[in-house]
Image 1 (tube, rainbow, N blue to C red):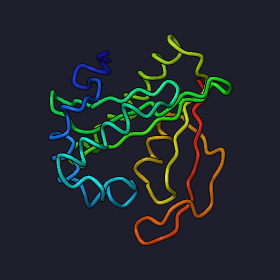
Image 2: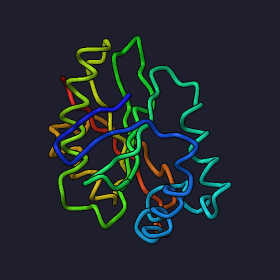
Image 3: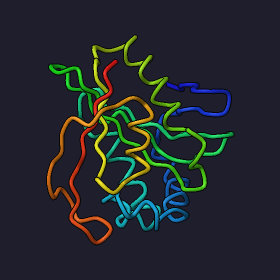
Length: 173
């Protein structure tokens, strides 16, 4: 399923054949991505990039859907509906962009369109963002999308040489 977000932004299904593109993006932005995303260090070659993709698209989590992000017809990152909790109506999302695509409002625009998609096709009432406390780019996306901080998990992960809390933001739809 392809989702057109704007004239220049599209979400296309993430596929195992994307491993070369994903590896290239991770290599190009490794320093930036590796500060906050635990999996980056494990993506070092096409085999590990393939594994990264397979683990996501075959997660088995309810409602999970993973997409590659295209901006001006170039793959620039990944967006995922990581899971949908049927009982609570919460959809957790995850995303990353190559640093060359930052500053274009891509993820905020995706969130706006995904909200409409989720409202029309699921029982989701809340989009959940989980961001490490020092991941200012992801926190900025959550806040620009209208999400509010609802909780925190202390000392969730050591990232960027510091124990960091995991902040949980909710966007009510």
